[in-house]
Length: 117
Image (tube, rainbow, N blue to C red):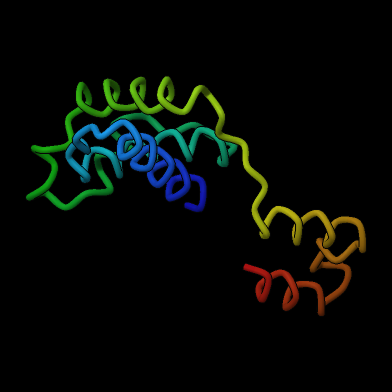
């Protein structure tokens, strides 16, 4: 989710610097989720997976065509720069380094992992 917010925010900032009009924010949200999920999730979602997240009364605005077009626009506008370090990634790395990422071996590590998220 962090990646999606970051992508949308950076894209809107890019448009503001160029004094361009923002796209439909619902479609931008879908496109940012789509790109963010491709970065942060082990299984890539399909367009239909993303569209199915929206309530029925908004699905007519978020079409496969609009989603894919805006995805390409966002990717090009941000020059394919998506991987950013966030605090959660550092915390997860330190958990691995300190062997706190195995809750089945150390019951307290589950609590630490939950608190980190």
